[in-house]
View 1 (cartoon, rainbow, N blue to C red):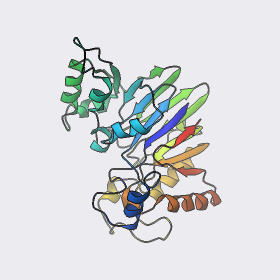
View 2 (view 1 turned 180 degrees about the horizontal axis):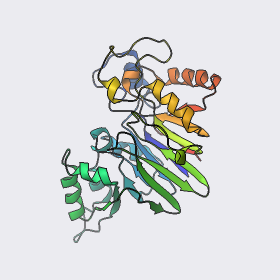
View 3 (view 1 turned 120 degrees about the horizontal axis):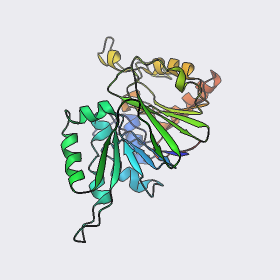
View 4 (view 1 turned 45 degrees about the horizontal axis):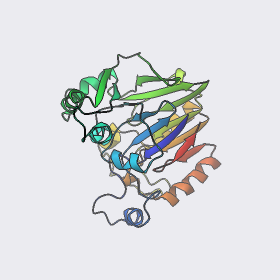
Length: 284
């Protein structure tokens, strides 16, 4: 497997619209790897796309992706789903009649399928694209697995039980991809010791390098989101061979160079952690 980080940002991407902080100014001037678009990952081999943020068309156009075998969604939040119209751009045939459309399988884990029927008109939009022959929506029950080109994908719920992570297995290699929402999660035995895990960085209540407080005390987000410190504890429990941290929010106030410095500090403390950037390619 090769894994490509299409977008390494979070709900607030970098640069943030109109923001003149040093991190956003640098990101506008330098672009990737200083800029970060919405959260999305592509797994080469099974050719599996995970989530479609607003920027997904641009992410795919600059990527090494040549064919998408299928797409799976982790949860309904707009930073992971708002680019779902990408299938019209990718699959529609505008010049022939009858059209010679391509069709992509869209896998929806059980709770995601339920939430798509409730939030943001996601179900209606996918029903429309399925009517056009652009997608084939496949609902999964909890416990179901999907096998694509010899890679088995197992979705499973996290502690925030509307969101799913994915365990991928191929040829004895195991990869855990948890796109978001780790609040309250304790890694179960079946994911411990994976070769690679890709997880969100978590919200930085305090700046990881300077210690400066970034969120006001008792901010409600601290009750709803896993913090960076809490995520480090999950990393300890996972005992993964390698860890990639992604979903890096603009509020973290760390540029690409800052994150390289933080990587060095973490390695000195025994953590094999690398921070993701847009277009990053990972060999497993």
